[in-house]
Image (cartoon, rainbow, N blue to C red; front, side, top):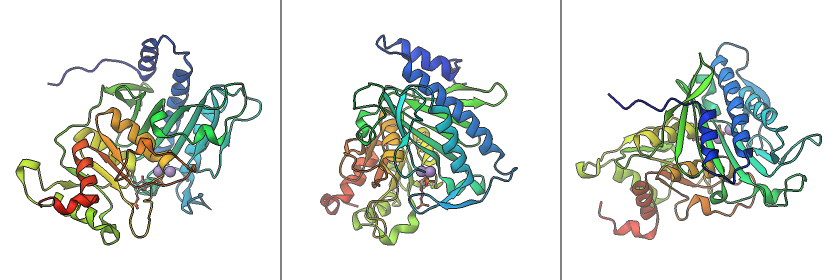
Length: 343
Ligand code: AHG
Ligand code: MN
Ligand code: MN
């Protein structure tokens, strides 16, 4: 029998965390609470998706030229509405919006910045496969004088994150967050209407044997990456090979599984997408912050994701994220050294 979890709502957990920081003003806690509310509402709508006339395309496409589904728009609007009037944010940015998302003039501007991917894995909506929300909170760089935030406040490297988290709408809804010190997961009890602590102090297991990558793109990969994937398929008990291949196609769900079972998730650069597919600000930085806080590693193949100096809101980056050992090995294969590795 496993040990009994601490019985705690996410709200209580946020408050306890705040108490450990005497300098805390309660603003971050308040922001997190607003995000929790948005998550509950989005979860409800995601669960209804097959029942109401919400499926299908809006007819528009987002700034990446991808079809926008109604549920993406719903999630984006819900988060915006939950977050625009709290007085703690000075600006926002969302994957579904082209430029900065401003706080309406009538509301107070605060010292934090929110960046989010309202619905990640949205091509899975129509087929009842897990999707998620990803969020990041930074402190503003410009003076906290009541003015609106600027692009400078948004374009911060990931190591400066104050909080990052995701909500996974799966067989149950899970809210995972970190302030960089411990990763905590809370499962929504739909009857009680509360997120309850279910994953206390998440650590990515060291003995991984899962890899997640869209292998359909094999032909377009660099030779080092091809060698690495071929290496994972070879048999060697001492290194738990061959690895299992698991690819959901929702980054949040793939990384959540790997956080629990151990594993590596990759979206590399390839001949068709020289910078990969995933966005640094909305997807890669927050997931890297979470995975590092859980003892893992996240890299673009050469350097830490969290150290990339962002140039634009929608910039993409290749990503290799998960167990430290696995990520270091793929980096090695992708560098010149891969030729020296004995396969
Ligand atoms: P989004 O729905 O926010 O645009 O993101 C989808 C992303 C990510 O969740 C997933 O890992 C990846 O796209 C899957 O891409 P492929 O279909 O190219 O494998
Ligand atoms: Mn996404
Ligand atoms: Mn999205």
